[in-house]
Amino acid sequence: MDRASILFCVISLALSLLVAVFAFPLATITRAELDAAQTVTAAEQMGELELGEFGQVMILDLVDYYIENPPTEVEGAAPVRQVRFQGC
Image 1 (cartoon, helix red, strand yellow):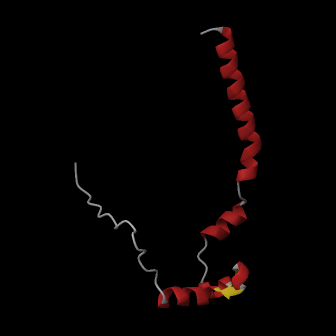
Image 2: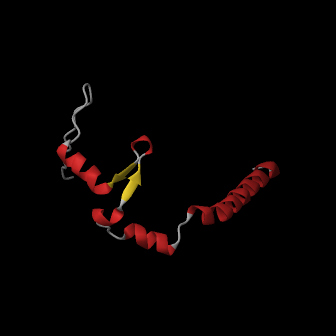
Image 3: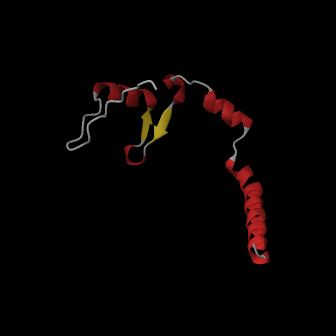
C-alpha cells in the first residue's frame, strides 16, 4: 500500500474514535434512569399521558379501551406466517 492509503486509514480511524469518545456520553443514561426503566410499575401509579388532541388520558382508561376493543385484522394484510422449529 502506498503512503496516502495508510495515512487515510489512520486519520479516518482516529476521527471515528474521536467522534465515539465525544458522542458516547450523550447516548448514555444515568444509573437512576436505568433502574427506573427496569422497575415494574403498576398502571394505577403511572397516572396520565398527554395524547395531543385527545388531552390527558389515564393509563387504566387506555388498558380498558384496548381490552374492550381489541385490534382487528386489516383488509389485505399478509397472513401471519407459521414458524416451525426443526432440529439439525
